[in-house]
Length: 132
Image 1: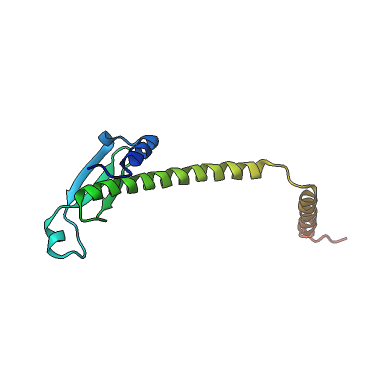
Image 2: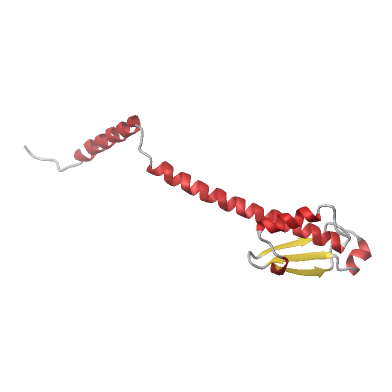
């Protein structure tokens, strides 16, 4: 039975470049509350995206089919978050370089030169004491 948003999930996976062939899926016994039923059935889904190495474990529902779906949704969320962080880091790096390379305002430059002159005076005063 296809899930209501199954087509949307397929579209999202295609957009992210996730193919079913790239996924390793394993079913394991769950843990936590649920009693004997959760301890006997392998409804927890372990999903690994081989190219990126991202691994997801999903035990949201009692149904294995639903957990397979939610594991794929969570995998898409994680990959999107990683890509978003990578893009943001690249943008921040570009902005940093741009800020470093732009010319300084005239007032800042004058203040820096004045500070250099005063430091030079201090250092010049550290010379040898002459006997005149």
